[in-house]
Image 1 (cartoon, protein in one colour):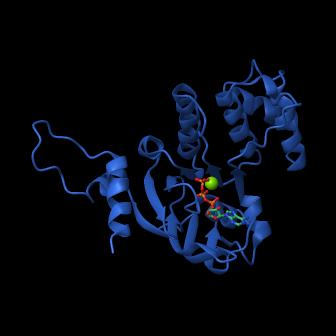
Image 2 (image 1 turned 135 degrees about the horizontal axis):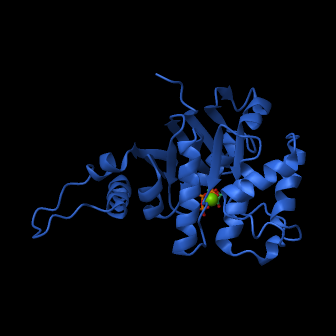
Amino acid sequence: MTAPAIAVGGLRHSYGDLDVLEGVDLEVAPGTIHALLGSNGAGKTTLIRILSTLLKADAGEARVAGHDVASAPAEVRAAISLTGQHSAVDDVLSGRENLVLIARLRRVPDPGAVADALLARFGLTEAGARRASTYSGGMRRRLDIAMSLIGDPRVIFLDEPTTGLDPEARREVWAAVRALADGGTTVLLTTQTLDEAEHLADRIAILHEGRIIVDGTLAELKALIPAPTVEYVEKQPSLEEVFLAVVGAKEMP
Ligand SMILES: Nc1ncnc2c1ncn2[C@@H]1O[C@H](COP(=O)(O)OP(=O)(O)OP(=O)(O)O)[C@@H](O)[C@H]1O
Ligand SMILES: [Mg+2]
């Protein structure tokens, strides 16, 4: 068996009196897309911040690309990238200038060539010389993801990569993320939208009340709720039904 790209055990985090993560366990296999699904305030961003070394956990363990986030944060940072919930794109710069800037900061050889290759890969060549302030939401998000790929990180964290995008732009981003995983990159993404998890992820973990309450493939998750008994046309449960069923079950006394 190959070592997991991300391994989390018993992770806890509180903000003052507010217990957000109360023993999170999660494993993500290399080269896969794992979706972390949860309601507003479930703690998705908190978990991503701990895994990307921006925040220290109160207890528990997390290893990313084989390195412990607490004892080897520099090694973790060298192996990952993070695309936050809020864009890192600088509006005053062009798309290409944004990429060149990050490539310089990460000391990548030949920043111009790296920028041009990423513009081409994300369908932004024509827009490359334009100020990012003129980009549509989808273009901006693709630029954001392109920026996070500089330096070939092995693991990428995407915090709500498609929030606020229209359906077409979401599909463009999904295709870009899928291509990353096909190239061997491990992706952990957070989402509140069930269809995103359904379309994109190899595995789906549901974070609820501080813990991962379900983790599996879409088929495994769908098998968790009983098939409807009386239906004229056989109907597969949607991920939304699974989500509501498992979250609801958890809340029962
Ligand atoms: N720096 C902070 N100080 C205090 N409380 C915080 C802080 N950051 C987050 N919280 C709280 O912790 C909880 C989890 O927040 P987090 O941002 O991790 O959730 P999330 O699952 O990413 O939510 P969303 O879907 O809205 O992005 C929320 O109740 C939030 O208000
Ligand atoms: Mg969040």
